[in-house]
Length: 385
Image 1 (cartoon, rainbow, N blue to C red):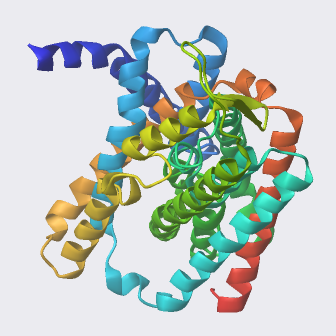
Image 2: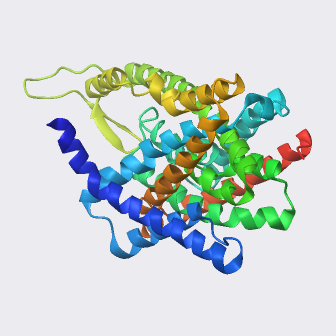
Image 3: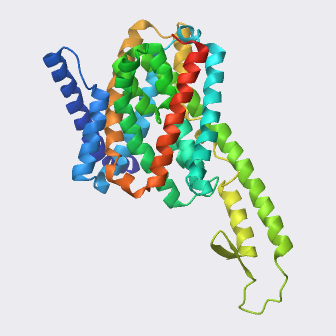
């Protein structure tokens, strides 16, 4: 019975995303018949249609479960299937230097983005969230470290707002940038993988440039996603050390006072938040038990779809996946990806960026520009053609 209840909960959102993705695919075919080639790819069209629907009609709660399922689970399945179209040999040319360059760009972007945020007056936690979202993988890189650094819900919402809207805008601009700069499919794939916020946005941005750009862009992006684990571990260690220093400082400065029945210990004021010393210690213990500031499950640090993607790529490289199976898998992956793009659009409320605050948006824009410059620098240094 629970399974049927779950399916009933998913149906409205799944139906809506399916209809929007179908309209997007039909729109692409109409463009193809009228102009000889689609000016707006089906993936991008699905995002635009979904965003327009959400902004005009809103999204009632009954659609949430199905839309979230499409944006997450269906997309993850599509990424796993995409791995079947990529062989390790085809990407071996870039090798160690590209992976090292990706790690370097991510680390540099984290530092620069954080400095920009702090220079613009953002609080420490909000600056960290903006830096993680800009440098690694958008919403996921914001949501994952938020409990580790004990970020406020308002900071998380503000950070996610800019990744949703600015990310879609960047996806729409990138194809024009490729033509303006005369970038090859390989260069464009690396650039998109390094700069675009989320995996589905990489798929949408690279689709107009062809399969090679999509394959390389996805692989580069997944390497960026893998940086989330080390970054969260580093933030967790930093948070624990800061908590230890704070507790030590409180132990030295709080006087021991007699406590009467019904009375509480002296309250402390720190960053505008007041609580008793015992309360703070209890909060710290509860945070440790909940995994806050310590770490996250391995599924958060190494998502299953990345493992699946690499496994499919390995099977293809070993010749264990016949060509007859690869082509249908590519087709199914494309259909599911368009559906996930529709869900991504339905998740974007353009009006939400108005609530994010001008400094957050400005910090995000400057950080994205710096990330793009670093990506261009990597292309030049590695002489990727």
